Length: 314
Ligand SMILES: Nc1nc2c(ncn2[C@@H]2O[C@H](COP(=O)(O)OP(=O)(O)OP(=O)(O)O)[C@@H](O)[C@H]2O)c(=O)[nH]1
Ligand SMILES: [Mg+2]
Image 1 (cartoon, rainbow, N blue to C red):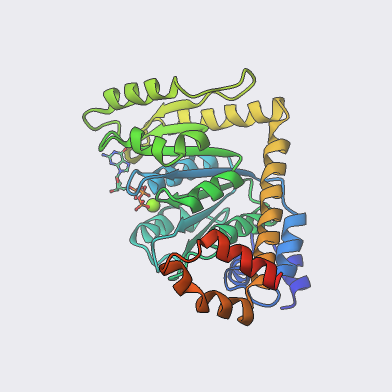
Image 2 (cartoon, rainbow, N blue to C red):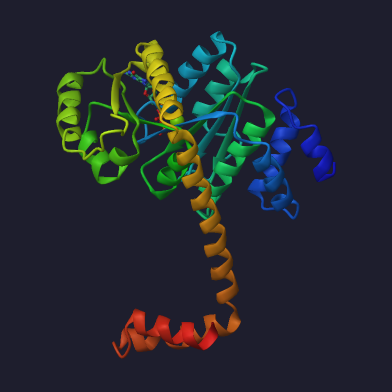
């Protein structure tokens, strides 16, 4: 299929086409940029939810329950599960197999797992573009589920309209979350596994940490929702809070601002990538390698060597 016919046949019903386009993007195949441009221009109608948090907190369980709830409202849902730590992809993960059997057979649900395949390079960028593909296909909700607490989660959170951070009672999660920068990105905390001991105390401590968060008058106040995802407790409440946040963004005209900020970051990222790849050719790389000794011997600092290379090869 040509790129034009791929784009023309892109729709909810056509999961094969969705998968093909995402694969082309994922593999950075030749026609990737053309497809990225086309889907971007058709995107913007979906509502994007990011679900992130530490490993095992219940992100997948929450995603599945939310999806079931949206389906009861006859809303279509596209899910992108991003795992920067796993070399597997395409539903090879056990949890994803369970998920496929639960909700994956639904016509109006599409699930895609994306993993790093050994290199972290551009995974979050590709996941965000995959979001554009699902958006252009017409899904009403898109859920980005990301494992761990690293830079890629933060990047993906920026591409979401509402970011849900999942925490659990154990292991001083709130403190960890604060350190990892999750406080700043959380629109809603889903305090999951609240069937476990210590949940109320942990929520109280999260609450007190949040009081220190500096907030402007017109800024969203982060919500905390108590969930037991496995038993579908608190999920309707979570969905309400997401809707509440969405209405807030629309009412205050922050949704467009937020998306514009995200598009700005994406544009800058492309420019940085281009500059970087143009700059580092054989000559500049050789020069760097030949001068590494001057760093070890403390003749030059990295700043000085960088300046020298920059002046020489720019
Ligand atoms: N007790 C309890 N267990 C839960 C709850 N929600 C999920 N679990 C269990 O916790 C485990 C991890 O849940 P997942 O949904 O796979 O968590 P995750 O955050 O997606 O995990 P990773 O993707 O591996 O980071 C599973 O065994 C779930 O059944 C809950 O509310 N209470
Ligand atoms: Mg998971």
